[in-house]
Image 1: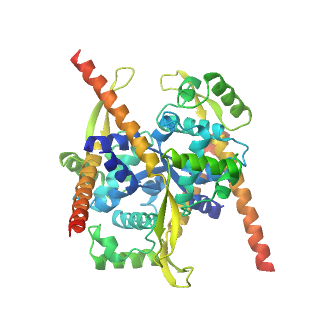
Image 2: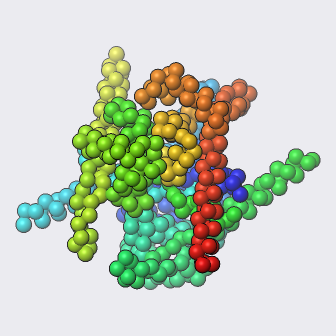
Image 3: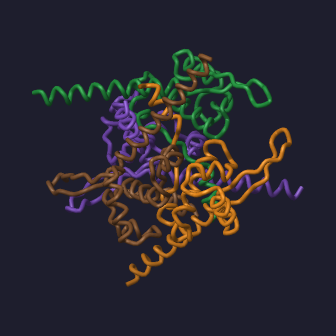
Length: 126
Length: 126
Length: 126
Length: 126
């Protein structure tokens, strides 16, 4: 029983900005694309920085071909990017970066924040 | 600039068990249902324990009617439940509980955990 | 067994910026003050926004009197503040805000960030 | 401004069970030991699985010698352990495991949980 709780704990949590859930639609993402991104984030946190379409689609309701196409479009639309890295032994490897997603989310946040401050200011002036 | 980072922080994060992302398909949930559940969890964390179909669908790509139907089905299939609560002033109010979801997820976890331990044991015996 | 894991989950996690652990000393906080702040943050997350010195010291190795004095000093030094709030029924209540702590932490972050960018720039120029 | 928020995000959060804050005293840990453990957890999450006493004490208010002694005692008292690992290239390295801490915390949780259930049962019987 004890060991089960410890094992459960070790599976771990992934911490997601609540804004992603309230703003993904405004970023023109649908639910399947959002979950694909959440799965990439989860794989990265668990140490697999370049999950394959096979690994991703295996836990989703989409086929490998659909997953491939969706990844391609997310890169093209600027939500994720593939980075080249070199290991200590000089071996090249690829990994995903979701920084472009966070940049888009921060843009939305700053826009909303600015708008709400302008409304506040106008209300104060009236 | 400083105040923007503090404002960003205050939006907060929601902590999700990584297992939910790897197991939702095995729980017979699709991506839209998963995101609906994630939105309910996020609303609860932010203090709104009974978000309406209007509030939920407003941030999703589904209509209010579709959201309503999906909520009804998730209750029927035992992923969420509606609880009656009483405030300090004795006023009755309703709230969602996602405990049934966590119970299903824990069931999956214990099943996987047991299977992997049996495989380990068999490998040792060989 | 299952119910124990769900009960464990419900106790919940608190999400702390890793920077707080690397920078508290530079903010002139000692370990006891840091843990007092972490306990206030935890109480707030669990819905108790104004924990008493009794509640705080009960889980710490300090006395109520020491806790009281430490709270007073943290307010004076600008790490926490007490806010007046009004409930829907118009009843006044007090709560802690740890925003001043986050502001100090963001200041440190921006300072470090700026310094490291200047070093980068100088290295590039050389 | 935008890049500062993204940089802030990348520093990341560490997710701590709230029970650790309410129970560390009952586990016979003081605030300095708790913060040392939190720092080890934070280093591990950031990919440094075997932080040195120099790295740990640099962010704390204790000396390297005191940190060394505290680490030695935490191992002796069964809160952390040093594990031997082998890299893909067959090179041996050491890392900390905080599993013993989680096991102790789960023990406390199960004890509390059991006691509170017995009280509930007795109340029902009365």
